[in-house]
Image (cartoon, rainbow, N blue to C red):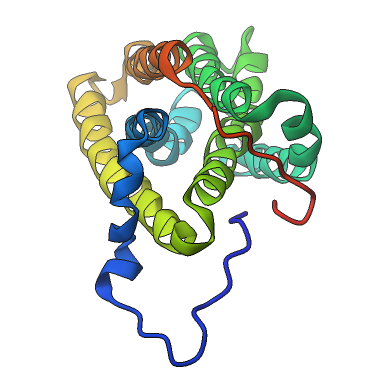
Length: 227
């Protein structure tokens, strides 16, 4: 899923700064990249809710073969990955990222109001949205970062954004989601409505701020070999 970034040429030294992407910190001087960076870290809080608690949630509300049903998320991710070039050409970076974040809001609202009976379709819809949630935001973000950084700093930029999201962002998300779920434990079960409303609200705030202030002045294009 990452943009094509070849390894360093033979004889070139690789520092800790290169591995952690510290050379890419200068990209934060770009206001739009700074907003994207903050949004990426923040959106990992809802992401942690999904990764850590979707399966317990589905099992608790009575979904049969919950683990098997969750595979729909991976299928969706693969499908939308194949369609990325088509969407990218028509929508561009800002719209792709905005749609991805908005999908997070819709997903968690589906989970909040869904159940294994009359609103089972909401649970399925929330899982199928994984392709848009992940590909439209994270894969688009990788491409945006890669192109903005340029040839010299793109490896560092990828390392930097990965450290920020899957390192710092997911750590914060794991802590926050754990506290929220523990707080809404009711007897032997959970108040899943209140649990899922919280990541929905977080994603909504991040989405609104992003759409208001992000500006992709540097045009980014993609072809089928990039994704």
